[in-house]
Length: 178
Image (cartoon, rainbow, N blue to C red):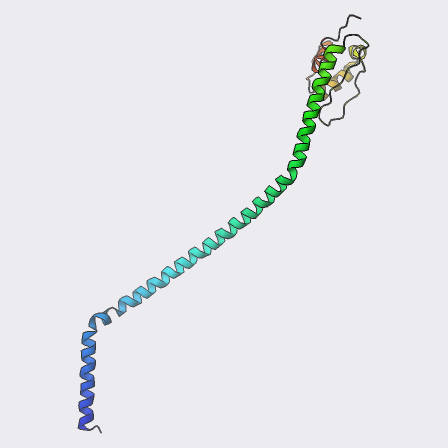
């Protein structure tokens, strides 16, 4: 059994506890709101976590794309010397073909005049007539092959096709006076 002093002490403690509860009523009433705030905070953390996961995925995709771009750029850089070489070759061939056309226009004046034939890229040149006489007397099959080589559409006129070929390579007229 409790003594009178213990009972008084117990009552004072109950009274102090009541006073503490009374003074803390406002704060204690917020406990429910704290739980709700805690739950909202957890939802926001999960949302942020999801966004970070998406961001990480996007960063990984961007890294992959940059790696692919770097590979493409490296490949292009390695192809540049070959492209420059091809451009230089094409320029040289173009200049050579211009010179051959000039040569043909100035010097292919007689039936015995040799024709400087124009090379088309890296395509193998078909057998070409050696001089104006041979071109004038070439048969249809040979003229058709030459037309295809020079991408000249063959026509119904064998003479017209021969003249088109002659003009393409710079010969002014396959009908010579000598």
